[in-house]
Image (cartoon, rainbow, N blue to C red; front, side, top):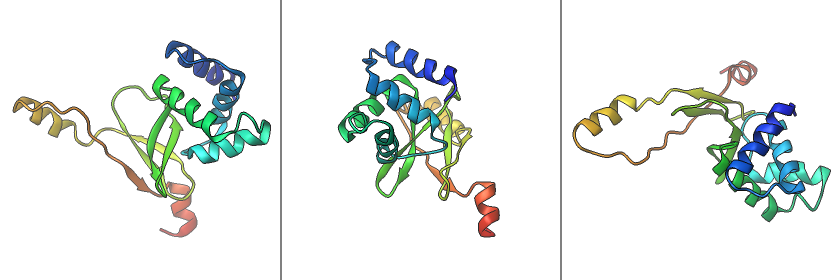
Length: 146
């Protein structure tokens, strides 16, 4: 992992009031090394390769929750009923496109911006919305002939 990513994780966790234990540092370092979208179970398996105790599911779940609150990880969708997370450094409101084959994540502008603005103009107050897009990245589409 690049040093700036580890520093970013540590600074964000500290800012969010998270405890900076050895296990959380290892989990953050491992999360930063994963490319694309991953489940908490996948992250826990990778952490256990380095340190079985730090890879305990409860420890990883709590660390991921803290990293999500701190903005180090972002929930980008779901696979098989499990939440998918990824590192996202893009600021501002946007959505994600997740490759169903390799988990690659791309950013997309919000397609609902005009609808939200129109709703606000009519007096509605939109409190949240969710857009999840799945497909194949260019490399996976080329491999499958899609």
